[in-house]
Length: 410
Image 1: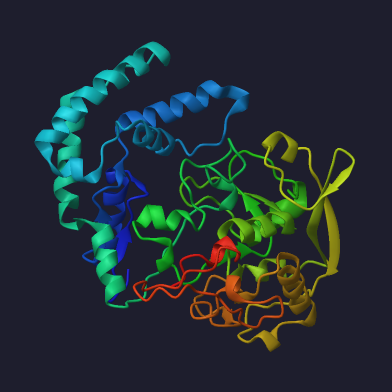
Image 2: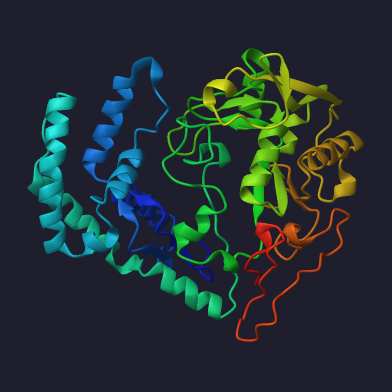
């Protein structure tokens, strides 16, 4: 964490205070201050029963497991939707927290004992544990939406960072092999507590190949030697659990879907260097399913699991790109590969990453201050936006015949 940057854990997250405090302790051991870390008071708290139920439920699914991290994330979000969850603001008020915890554990113990044949939890033991967490985290807990609004009014730079990926989105992913929240770009507004008109630009991040951790359909997955090589060169292990990620060729069908669902303005392509030794590189441009060609992602996971990739094969460059710092430093075949991906997904590539080092990055175009893609004609020139003559409005309103993405312009 940089001292000049405020870091906020938004209200759309769920927080395991034990794990968070362990991470803060690791930072302090490295002489890194956490004083600029803020936590939304409306973020929900992962409790011991969430972790226990998550693990027991996944084990009970047997061959139909969904690949949960078993960290209690899903059950925490379930309680949030059921309106029985405990938020950071509740944790800060110990008297109210004790009352709420007593009621909740009484219900959860019935589930633990009768459904999973597990021992019950002790209310007082859990309360004492979380009482300590509350005191440790209290200085960091704030009204994050208010802090963000003040930052917007001061014209400060704000970057919303989403975890996971489009196909893990609860509404738009490969359900049920998804997470329990909305990591797509639209989730930033709800998860942070700001309006959509405050978002100036949406940047997508994708690897030069495709990976997935956990269960779920994966048409371009590579097995045996090729998949293992990508995993080894790319150090593909899950951030949270350390599980080995499944690896495969770049899937442009998924890429186009992500561009559409997130409204991407540009892309950052990472780990291009992982492909340096490839003689040939394949890109999935469509699917074959039940005898027909499909260019769009199926909404049914069962149908998606039957998809066979339709590949275009491109020549590899078979030389190191790790020292390249300008676009013209890249081998022609690497440039051709990037251009092919950009054309397939109809979105410009603004950043190319060639390694783990911060300096191993090529900036193709300004990813922050570039134009909104929705406001451009197909030839890249700015489109005119018709506005109604209503001087009392501070923002432009697109005419009803314009695309929905133009509504509420800043």
